[in-house]
Length: 400
Image 1 (tube, rainbow, N blue to C red):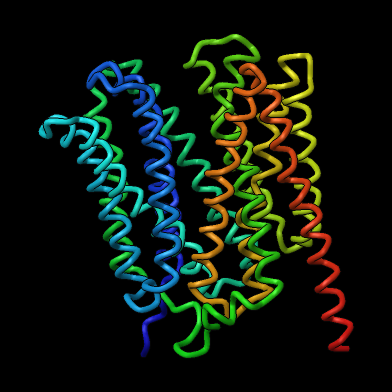
Image 2: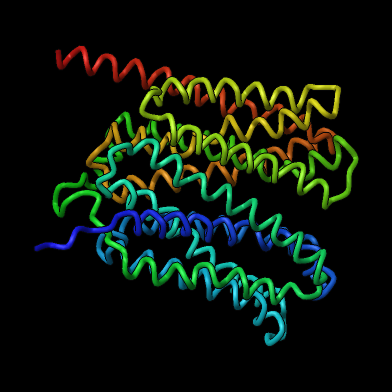
């Protein structure tokens, strides 16, 4: 008798995979001032840490279009957890043993950024390949774990520093590294299926020549930009708009944003079978644009904070929703498609926050001006979805 595969084990490993990604993306920024004081690193150099992280992730997204299928999902996703754990551990060790501490930090960042990039490319197709009935809802719930992971890192680290002092940050780094280390064994033992059978997935060339694929890429760029811009500037916006301390700013800004984003993904995961994904995405896109306008144009600080927090509710569906729509429209896209989608999302997440910073600087340090400009991304997403709906409707009519 053949033993039935336990895909819930696969799902649990993928949940922790996104928690790992949240740790690697959100822990180091909490230590920027500590790095500055402890190792005498300039703020200009510290600004290179997130840049190196996201640039490495982008390169992994691009490279994964070639090697992920050849090496195999299991090998790559296990490597993602090992590299994430090693990178986190070395963050506490290398700056102490190398003559230039900053080089030690960057080496560690590159290692766990490679792990993070592999997680981003592989976890979604691994879940997509599992025989779950409600794929849209499962995908949305899966991505909610990044939000809970981000909240856990910010709240857990803030509590640890309050109790044990920020000088003990290395101990906390080792504690966070236990998550990917534990999850390594989950991925070694859980069932993993191929997304598309050998020889049946679209070639990269054919994928790039498919018009609807580029529409999906635009959706991902706008999703990444809409999400990352508010996530990265939420703390600074809260501090400047309301005039609170950095600790309160971190908790009121990024934490509220992440909480609402997680709630949004959980709610869609629960009710997705009764909802039309494209219509939900349209509503979220309009709501997101409204939140950016509220945050940037409101004269009342509390309304600005509300716009910032509720933006999390609006953007929550965008990234996983774009992935689900892509799976529906290009079922033979394979791993290459997921890698290109991750690349597009990360590109939006890297370019838009930098654009906001530059425009705000040009406006004399007025962050509201930069956020106002960022409202263009959810607007483009809405128009792209309307074009997609029209194309799908035409395709259905032709078949009939």
